[in-house]
Amino acid sequence: MKLSDIKKDLPAELYSILEKDIKELRPSQEKAIESGLFKDKNLLICTPTASGKTLVAEMLMLKTILEKGGKAIYIVPLKALASEKYKEFKKRYGKLINIGLSIGDLDSSDSGLSKMDIIISTSEKMDSLIRHKVKWINEIKVIVVDEIHLLNDPGRGPTLEILLTILKDTTKANILGLSATIGNPKELAEWLNAELVIDTWRPVELKKFVYFNGKNFSKD
Image 1 (spheres, rainbow, N blue to C red):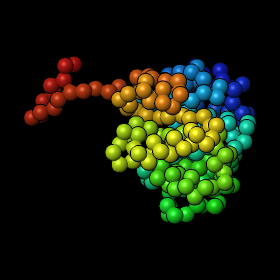
Image 2: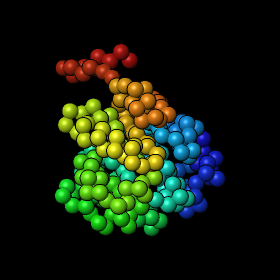
Image 3: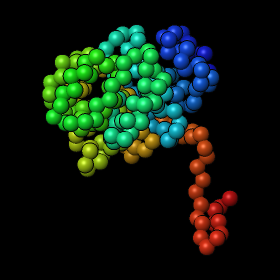
């Protein structure tokens, strides 16, 4: 599928940005669109690293904000990853929408976030914001959870699960879960009430081999 094939589905401002770097969509991106990405459906995308999951999230967030208003939240497990995504999104979309980063003091409500269209945060910080009863929670239209398999993590999992449970009950937002590795994708998709998107394509072929004492013992 070429990017031009979905031109009619994207806001003109967003399409003009994407077409500078993208001509053809990757398999996971095509599957996500065919599974209802632009049709108000929850999706759980389980595809290899670097297969294009982030672009799926970007298209959903920008399309929703530009066409319907409201906010999108992008939840990540680590502060470093949040900062990385903030820089990427700010560089690409900073002239189009307002992008905020919230990873600091858990006792702060970060009042400036009320003016942001996309808010990038860790699950712990977002949980804190919700508990501070931020007024903009009802404005959330899209919830993206990167590395959603960490729901199974003994440390971060419970916080993320509680956060998602609260957001599911208090908002009407679409949920987009992203992961390269999920042990029970069908069960997780059912819990999220989401369409499951699975694909194995990766930009670089993955090869397994044993290297010992200067010799390669691969089957190839």
